[in-house]
Length: 225
Figure 1 (cartoon, helix red, strand yellow):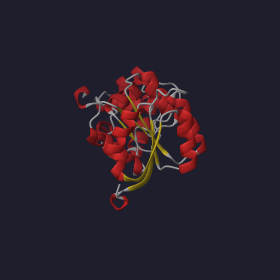
Figure 2 (cartoon, helix red, strand yellow):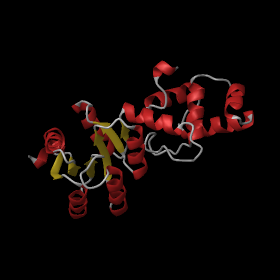
Figure 3 (cartoon, helix red, strand yellow):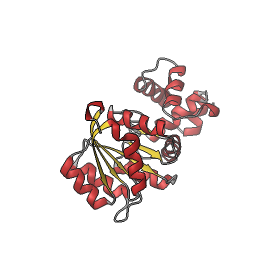
Figure 4 (cartoon, rainbow, N blue to C red):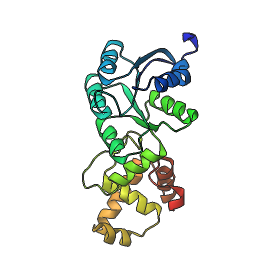
């Protein structure tokens, strides 16, 4: 590999399927000066601590440990490393487990090369990337959540509670304040306070700005409007 044409310093791929790891090397290797590869969690952790890669790509299914456990260990030891899950799994439970473990992105292995490379570039620029299926599972899981789990992995680095996400979706559908108040069992004054906070967070001055933000970040799909 000609390092002079590389964009980033180093990447580590942890996947027990050697053909998949070699495929990633073929597609994404030219973007990095150094490419590391491991085929189980233990050797992946060892390489990560020895080589300090900028980006780690990891599958959920590993022969010696589940991917979410490995991600937690990696984030504990290397908190600044970017981690992208790359898996065949569409399971909402697995996606949520990986999200809570601390991944910065999730791409399903059937996605095309262009989306995969785009995800790498976004993560390396300090942003997050979740494919459409992952975004849908995450939003559905937390849009009605009662806890304050941060959706910072979906919507940049801005923290949104489950209640705020649900309100954004209702606003996008142009449900009235009175109807939202009745639906969420909150006072109209509280709904207006939520609306003001959301507009401030998404830097929008109008409903159109909220809708634009929601569509761009996968909070709501165009066909739902």
